[in-house]
Length: 364
Image (cartoon, rainbow, N blue to C red):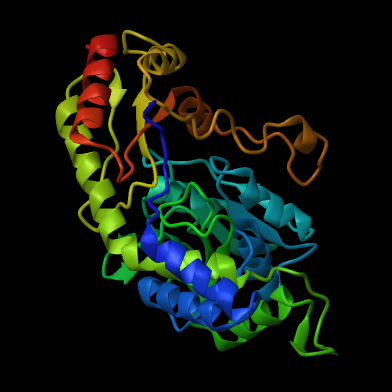
């Protein structure tokens, strides 16, 4: 079976994990500092604060920027549920803006969505492709609104001459399926000293030092074992990104021109890191998205549907008056059409050939 995603692990990860075990220091030690330094360098920021998950990173980033009850947070309806959970757990109100053709928040709709209670734009760099940051910054220019990047899937991506993670306060995930992984883990990046301090306090039960509590907080601490994986993985980041990009180019060149199959795009000012290689199977294709998925599964090719419905379209959210019943036609269409094909660095030439031939046999 060709997995839709697979982590790239090796001797360096094993060596650093054993180093931690032999040290006897399992939390908040030197490995955390090494990992944070590597992520800050990759994101191009002054600060990187490690936490125990991408969801924790989102919550800490919003809380550190003062987001809470009564505040509206503009965000995407086409995302993993962690984005929404972070907003509503803090008592804030999500305000959804539909997506564009790049699967990211449609910036042409952003200005009209901003209201008097809007305090943050929590956009998502979906699948590893940067959102239009220039348009987002222009829409909120001069307003008391913060940018929080949900960059969970986009470590190493670039917009213009700036790296994803450097446009305000950003949140990365290092879950097992991400391009680089700590098993579970997250990081908040920022150039704002006050926000960085607040995140460090929040992750450690609100303590500025032992038993000196500055504010109510959480246990969002990352372990030294997770950080050890992260240090080794960050050394691999450039190679991982280039391998994914090379595989994406191979797929796009081979699959171009198939009726009803829309391939991922990359504009000249944005650098995609292909956390997912996501195609659209439109109504012009010979098979539906679900039929193609089933056909590929029969051939031993793993695929993913990210995501099968708008993030708010689940029973647990339908009774929440903060969410309501927003109409998001582009998101609903994408939910019917998207299919992610394997693009990870462990794919062989034979794997790529099988993926291409199987898609062509089904659709061409």
